[in-house]
Image (tube, rainbow, N blue to C red; front, top):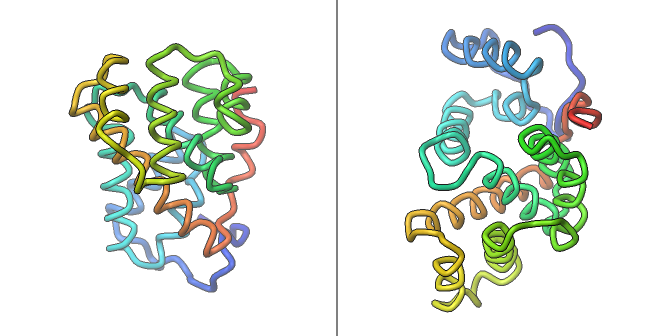
Length: 190
């Protein structure tokens, strides 16, 4: 992998050599994305932590769900915007631009999702994710019922909550360690 710029403020070195499975995963990232996301590099000092992170991420963001990949990325960006997570706003903003084919939507998700042209289903989903992020203690049955009225199943509600909760956790880790987004994300899909 050669020398790469420091991706966090912490002095934690990637395991060297990487286990074969991790090396293969990083190679797959290079092949499909053209890069190894810095979040993976940040966790690669401890392969057990990296594996736990990637297992949860892959299940929530790529696994079977009534939510589309775009919807899950929209949740990630809205949560990250509220939390002002530099890494996730940049990385997942690029994913929204890519999946939607709409650079304006990606920007709106980062800046203020309420300014975006969203359908009622997306608006309800993002309003719930925002409320869960800003004041989780105020979630009530009427919030879940609003999602049901927008067409979400109870399984979908669980997935919305899980994606929002995951990014609330990762945003805090990224902030604590000053995780830096890959340069390639900044200009991607514009």
